[in-house]
Length: 458
Image (cartoon, rainbow, N blue to C red; front, side, top):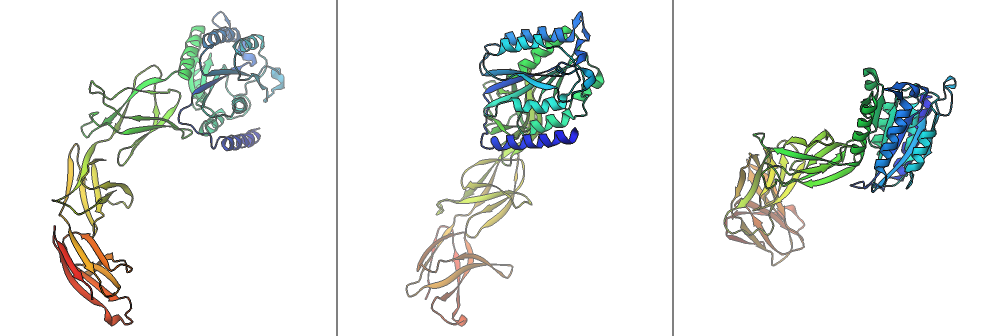
């Protein structure tokens, strides 16, 4: 049975993933709720002054009446344990009694009232079959509300099935309402979904209201972007919220400090567990975020920032000076920033590589609410003319008695204008038509800030 279940689960996930590969969306807009009802023989046990099945009929009927007419909502009913007597131990006794369609609320109530509990409890197989009940289309939230008074009796693994269906984005984390449950009963379902005890009719009614509210409504939250003093002063950066299970992007919010000086309120769907990416430089990631339905949730994350600027003295000849920023000790480029502009970075140690000629690498420190400024001297110009013929020519800089290559001139051009940092350099060159290496020459040059150095190669 277990091997067979795993095989069908693999086929289901493959088929679903293939059909939805191009059907991703950032915000689901329709909710589908599948009520998965336990109709095993134990549902005839007492709850207060009635049987569990009668209480379920009564409260589900009231819930369905309250949901009728809700925009963007479709519901369906699947039942298990109701077609075979317990002595047969039928571990495939599950059936979609009323599928998803419009205006089926009365049909579902009538079907619930006509069902007579009989057989065994097969939760894993029912969950697996439930995945087929949801139409395969994007822009939906697929929710299962499982109502049961027993744990798995067919050697299935409800936790594994639930986790697999969630990870593939087929369903959201199920809700489980446990009737007449014990502590061991609760532990058995913690890995399946969000569990609620219902040992009395009033408890059952309360649990249904909570679950339905979570399935349909958003709740409020705020994100505190903390500085080095653990104060929520950082702001004006985008935050992306992803479903932890499917990886689907759910929300983007530009963080804002409101008129009262507090992080602004945002709305999140409480049915998801989130991975949040704060798009600072570098980004900050916080995982396994749960928001509590009906309660304002505060999400704190360390994001202390300062600013960086590369500034050039005086009038500059650079048309568009840029520089690379990396974390100290890393080869990964975090950002390409324009000169004479400010950009925020997380507090820490960085390496800046200025794309000047020659390139310059400097280590800098970003501190809280402070602008770190890297000052560059005003460049000069090297103007080279080759009136007679074309040349192979490179510019070098001497560093600790070693020639370090700086720039190669295009051989197809005879006139060059190069904006360079001030300093002492060498040009090593040879005529393109020369046939001997001994015809190589070198010229020492000096570049001065704000001045042009003119050289003729001949």
